Length: 118
Length: 133
Image 1 (cartoon, each protein chain N blue to C red):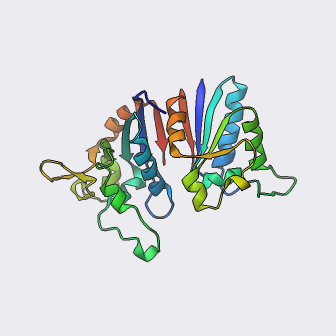
Image 2: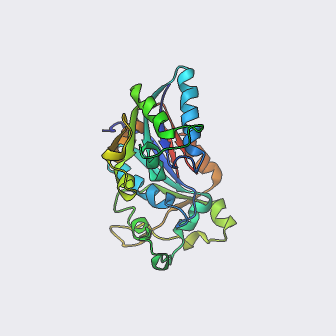
């Protein structure tokens, strides 16, 4: 099945981001494909390379970037990013900035759509 | 570009102003309305509080979104519903919710349609996707 994912919460503060990631890993392991991941609201903080967590903790942005390197379409909402100072310069590789129209496309082109938020 | 007229529902479940969820859900409604999808919106749980009239966010120092909600119909977000039980639990009269637009001919206010939970559940079951805020 082709899945699209919406992430509404930032890293470390809320479990939504981890749940989304773990859900995606489980789905991939079952043979499903990910059409796209859209980061909205505080979710845009997931993709900043400025984060530098302790070494014994997971590196959330790196994790997303590695997923993007496998070809998964990863998009940060431009309006939500602008509010929070997230620009192309601070994004991890394999994630790009675009608009809500991309979310519409992700929904249109998936079999199942899952939201991870508060 | 999404162009297949799929049924997509936006649910608004959070109380207004305490988080950005309601405001950003309205942004999604406005954008999605410009795409060829069969868009519907449901206010449910604490989300119904967003439909109370007379909200003023000046004191909070935030822009607020009441004007946007009042213009949903102008933006062609016309299938807008509110959960009867959620209103009742919060002691909000069904005819006290804000208008989301005006009828073009009669100028009469258009309000979200109040539905029973079972009707909303049936609508949800018929969706291609639900975007949950």
